[in-house]
Image (cartoon, rainbow, N blue to C red; front, side, top):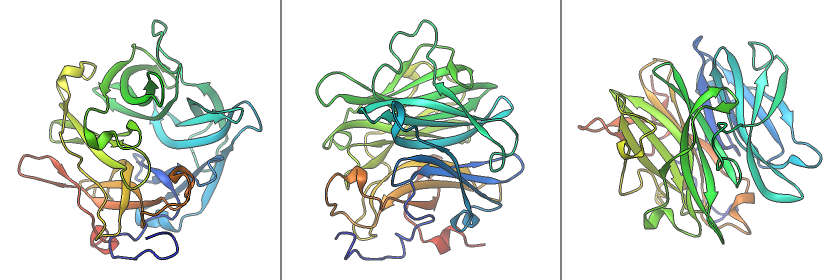
Length: 329
């Protein structure tokens, strides 16, 4: 099945078309903000709505456009919007068109309190802690930010090694919205077969808090049909910077389902539904598996949504649902 002859099912109906690496943030006022990678990888966009469903038709604003040359001139990837220390920030990755894989993490800051209307400014690259000699010196992307016990943490993917290199996930505490306070700690590296298809990859971290545990989902393998979601978890009272406190599940928690017509699910985010209780997982996937050329440049990774359910051990369960099931009153 390819983009000309794929099968539409009740499970592969998009929330938002052609928006990969989707990120949704719910403000304390209840407004939902949505940003994602656009197919041309050339800008940062934002839309907002009073409901998650409303994001589908919401008007989109371009906040920032890539540079013509040098750093930040190609591959504008995976923006996330966060409210940190009283201000709005967007964390994203970008490359240099003279060296397209020179991907590094960058930060935008909103000069006002309305991210849809106020001006945004560049803060440049994310800064490592003063004593950190390793972070952001190689291919680095997919940063996410979260608050825990009054402090902010930054998790990102960075490649290491030689040859095709290996993409690992790292965590550090933050000193400021654009600077880390601690040296990097390795959270996960591609250990298992499902994380090593075509490329050895752990990327796209997302945080979900539930009943005393912190769950960290991530994406694994190359960006085609083999792309899937894995998960780590930790007790909320444990030391988040101690890698021994994190436990990694042996198998993926979400993967391709040919019958459902969902291929290469991954790079997700989590947000509370309007009821303030239900957890929603916003992820991207394609409705077909046959891709002409590099999967990275196929535009049809769409933003999808599912409700997160919990099993008898309070672990999140990810199961494909229809839009009607997700948005049922």
